[in-house]
Length: 101
Image: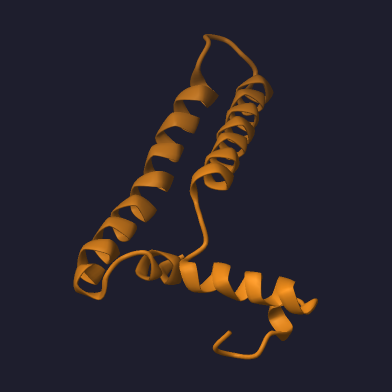
């Protein structure tokens, strides 16, 4: 993930990018534990299995939404897109394309 973050920002903004990446990397699991804990305990007198079902359904929904957003908004850096275009023109896979193309 760090490689993608640093490829997307100019070199002089690397420190800002690292700070933002670290903040969100720590914030995500913290919020997830809090939300899932609330979902687990929601409802008076419910069995633990019912709370776990709510947690699993919510986690699956959040994962699917995140995957859809990433697919929609995250784009490959220009040099990767150029390598794919070059490989398509030669009939080779991108992995077999020579370096620098």
